[in-house]
Image (cartoon, rainbow, N blue to C red; front, side):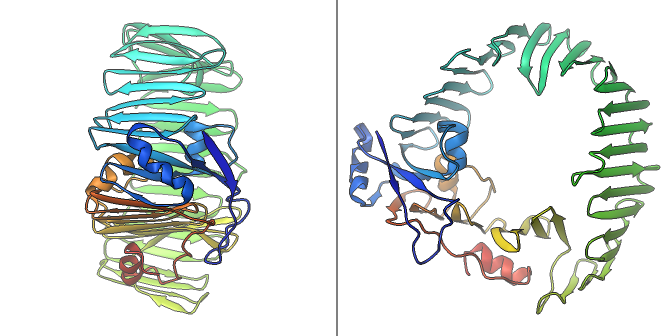
Length: 454
């Protein structure tokens, strides 16, 4: 049984009401989970085989309780001998068993049951009408769509599906010899997929004989024309919107032009010579890779020579940094910046309405630190495989790390020496670590940030 209790923000970090309203405290476990009964008293538990862990709202809504509020945290229980088997559960709501991770998994919730043994078998079935689901053994499959439509097939000989793979229906005979799909009344036929494509409907018109020539138009959202792909090609997506983008290769790679709602870039002998211009700031960048990159305007001056010397002065704030060439993405009320170091390490930040809401420092393979205004922070030393997934962390990730510290609004979870020692502390009030201190996005901030120094 799960009990929900309110949480008040602590003085260390004031959690916004929209982020956290309540979380579930798990009480009354059986078998190897008996040790977790003390969580009802606010105690902590340490075990080489089992631990308690916080389940974030995204995972709650996606896999456990779709009708849950988008700010509800839960306290789950886990026990097992990883990676051979590991059982995770939230009593009364969720039960999961991973075995030979990541090959096998059994998952049971109030609304769905799933079983997978990659690559041999997989199935998932809904527990409520119309009891939709899908099952596959090797290349034989059958299923029921969310509209109650039944389908089956033996790939690649014969088969059809409904409401899968992003379309209303699919049909194939001796794939790839013949295949067709229907979506919103638009029928697309492919012969010798993907060489020949034909469609003729109000929502889509296409005739492609790849790679010789082709034209594909989907409503007013997408228009693609090419001759001798990829040398001569023109692509336009979502014109007149913030997501609009245009691409022109004439011919690739001699001349390439890329435009979106915020910037334009022209390449000669792509990717050697590049001219970049950012509309809002007026920043202009000239690149002659790998020899020199120079940028000016918009309050930013930058210079990079042979990637050995890089310099950047941002007059919009009192800082001067020496770092690698960065990437900036701008949306209506959100800005994302990313700077890479030697291709494998990076600093990534996201700002919303001028406030930092997400930061990730990856100093591969030595350490990684992630801070999220809604989910807390996560320090991993070392981090050989930079995946962000809770089941990966529980089944395999902690086995590869000497130190793993996860700070959520409701728990502080510690794993040491490849998971041999684990400890989870439940917080009395909702709180997370404060955001990282602003820096120059240079090597110093990368290394200090990756080890959680603020």
